Image 1 (cartoon, one colour):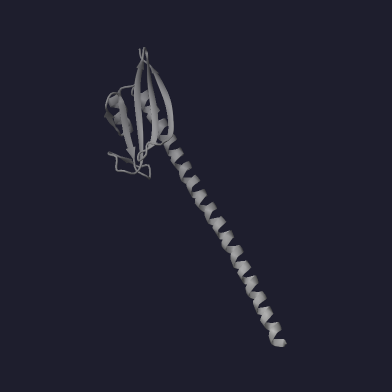
Image 2: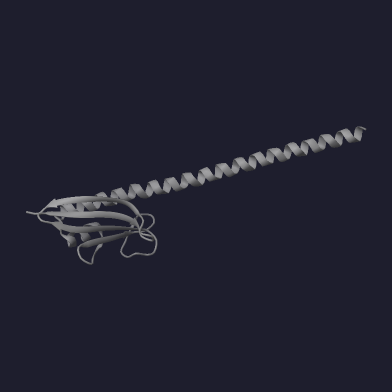
Amino acid sequence: MKYRSSQSKASLFLIELLIVIAFFSVSSVVCIRLFVHAHIVSMESRNLSHAVIAAQGAAESFKAAAGEPQAIARLIGGHLEAGNTVVAYYDKNWAPVSEFNGDGFKLSVSLYDEEHLLTAEIEVNKAADESGIYSLYAKHLIR
């Protein structure tokens, strides 16, 4: 009889141990998902901050260059593409690069002339899939 009592205590202990392991497994899965989500939000926030800074710098360059595409390209470290579009590329750490390398970001400044008002549409995109991060418009009065 005594043997049976110790066996039931051992099986009760094992059941409790399994329940505790299951609880900690579920808790760890939830925590890992939260950490991954926090990391993704942090990276998106970092990219948005850098995109805003790059776009604001391009807008200031547009104003300083009085809308001259070659001067804008020189100021932002980019190059002139077809028409009146200036393009600059950045790597995944937001360091300027001279050419698109497959991973990183693209800053484009498209210039439009509307009577006596020159408008710049400034967009920052992920270079791989062209998904937009930030955009703004800047205007300059032509005299």
